[in-house]
Image (cartoon, rainbow, N blue to C red; front, side, top):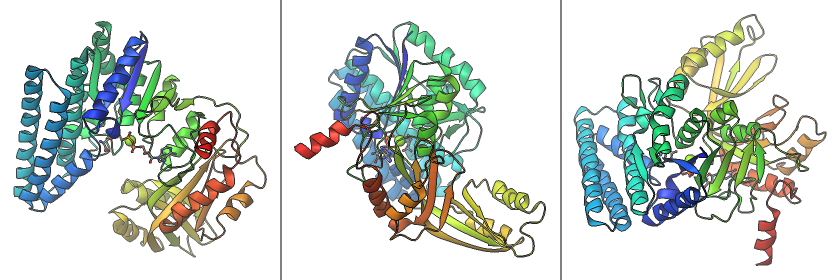
Length: 472
Ligand code: ADP
Ligand code: ASP
Ligand code: MG
């Protein structure tokens, strides 16, 4: 079997036109002898709107919540009727969409009565986004001659019960994915399943965290030992910076697993941070591709990338961070102090991104989150604590940064106008990061990009696209 997992993001299924384009991409793969398994996100922005509806309902705004749901119902019905010309299948899909929205409205009414939104109910509400898009996609594929069959993702991806950020149970998935999907593939069918959503062992709906459809794609690809995992999105691949921030960004043609994972973890939204893990385990290449520009070759993520003459491959930014300063003149270097401090972060399930220590103080960076006051209160039993939000971490990823002399001087010269709060260099061979004010982040990325990507290595970066843009 030439199994290819094809994951399509929200913008690849945002409306009827995008879904028709996606169907053409999948048809193309089938025509070239591949066996696709399709994983799909909710239509663009639907997850945000479902979360807004859930929040409104739980604050007692029943009519506001139902109004959001009603707009979403129209959007899904419009897409379905534009896609399906065959009357009977169109009516069937419309009825299915209505059934799902009726059920969603019941949940929203219940929330408005109870006025409490638990992570478990939040996952149930957002799951409708992918449950709907995967059904519409399946019907649209069938009408276009693809033998598509819908598979409930919650029967394939099983997780723990950490609602909103559930961890997959690899052993169960390794068994379920081949059991549920391979018989369909063997019959020449194209399984279509939702990304992002899953279930715990009790059968309750969970999710893998925002952006988690990439992770579903990789989990399925890993469990099926696919030939390739394709991530179809709205940009030409992994770029040298977020093209929304830096319009000069170039496509990176090839990058290593380790570099891509580092970029994803440090904020390059193009990939969910856990996407690379299943691929690494099974040594499966990942290809990031643009469903709006099929001519682009995308980015190939492979175990070991070829040597790159440029010092960096890409710049990522992680925003909405906080810095915590812990000052303890008496105890800092005493035995067991650090472990007591980290035990507090552990207790609050709060991952720490960066740490820097001095004789009397420790500074740490964490995602800004609602537990920060409680974390600070616990830490203040050990030492004096201050925390400050609205920080951003800039992360420069490249090959053997540690081995390149003078690189730090060049980086800080490029951002000399910016106040740098914390630096981490040397902890990783491929990553150099520093923390600045969030408001300075976009400008800093553009300055760094201008400094480091003016003469990019053509073996690794798509310099032809830049030349074409300049001459047009
Ligand atoms: P999807 O809905 O397909 O999953 P996302 O919005 O999650 O798409 O991710 C794609 C977006 O990631 C792009 O539109 C781009 O703005 C952003 N992005 C951030 N950093 C990068 C980068 N280094 N390369 C490419 N895209 C990036
Ligand atoms: N729909 C989900 C989100 O918006 C998952 C995804 O798109 O990957 O976060
Ligand atoms: Mg995404």
